[in-house]
Amino acid sequence: MPSLLLRYEDEIETKIASLQKLFTITTKNKTILEALDNYEELYRQYVQQQDEISQLKAQLNDFKSVLLSYKNAKTDLEDLINDFKGDY
Image (cartoon, rainbow, N blue to C red; front, side, top):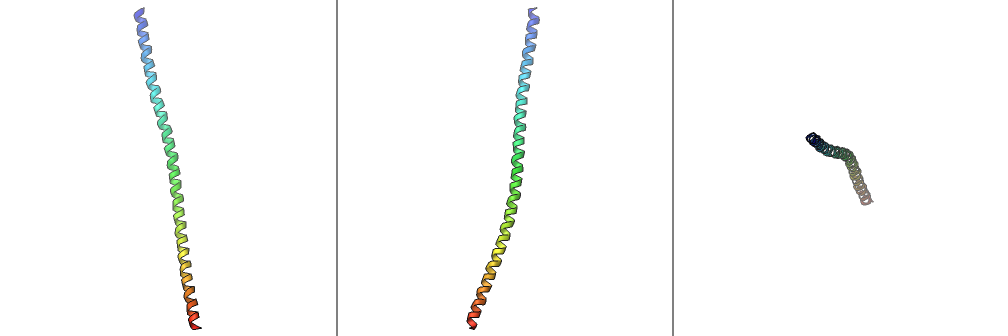
């Protein structure tokens, strides 16, 4: 009977060790999945920010173009004023 009890005790300890390993693996997998979820969210935010940056760059280029047009128009107007002053 004691040998039978020892055998069951060994089996129980083996199963407990297996369950502990399984729990450790499951915990690690859960941590990895959470990290992947976080990474996916961060990547989604990164892509969204890149889109916003592209839009801002396009707006900045438009503004630069308008500013250059304004500067050219100002120069043309100053030239006309100077020509007018020279004529009179």
